[in-house]
Image (cartoon, rainbow, N blue to C red; front, side):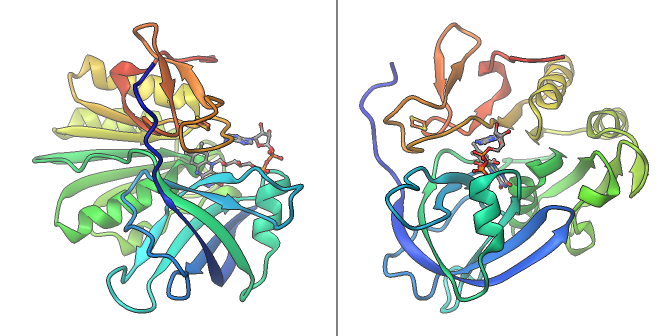
Length: 272
Ligand SMILES: Cc1cc2nc3c(=O)[nH]c(=O)nc-3n(C[C@H](O)[C@H](O)[C@H](O)COP(=O)(O)OP(=O)(O)OC[C@H]3O[C@@H](n4cnc5c(N)ncnc54)[C@H](O)[C@@H]3O)c2cc1C
Ligand code: FES
């Protein structure tokens, strides 16, 4: 057990100020925080919100979505960006809402990425893993931290990573070569690791990809933080629905202790 449960995050309703399809079934949804009746804390990269995708008592379960970006948080008119892939009922509802609709949010929740103290970082995103890592890159830009970002996708029709608006270096790659460079995120990241020295690696993506990146990081003796994905119910550490095995035989409560963990704490599952 992990001691007493500490509830975090605040609940508020926000207005959708933008909702655009940016690639395949991926939507960029911007929420205006200005009219939110509660003061939401400034989110950190890797943190997420539990989003209620529809009103009504039959839609109790919220869906966890990472923060993809924030704008002018300390000024009037600030907003929150979510990058949402339409994969099922809840995300489809959210992506279908028009500008002006309201959604209820709980957050920001969980433990995010720790900013690097020194040196250059390698950010490795697979698929929708770009959502939190793009926010991380933008926050690193604010403090002039050095990084390379590798964003890998299966193909160009589901690729979204506007690297040109970031200060750091990086590459977009696809497995079939239909956009960016041909190759996998892990393959490209391994190449970067041969050419540069990194003080920290941050990873978010499919389980097998994160497992492989954490193996490479351990071999190179570079600290590595991974953002885990788990089915969630409460999102605040109460139901234990998100628990998954840790390497020391313990259970990791992904929503409250994570979703970001030091890779050495994680027991990888379903690795093919
Ligand atoms: C911490 C965290 C951050 C996330 N950030 C993002 C994000 O920024 N953008 C984004 O598009 N998605 C993100 N996800 C995944 C997202 O929560 C799920 O895709 C979503 O809950 C699916 O809900 P649904 O009702 O549309 O799908 P459902 O109808 O419930 O299920 C449709 C399919 O999605 C799968 N699925 C459902 N929930 C999850 C889940 N939690 N993780 C993985 N697969 C799931 C199901 O197995 C099924 O195959 C995140 C998940 C977590 C845990
Ligand atoms: S989702 Fe309920 S404890 Fe994590």
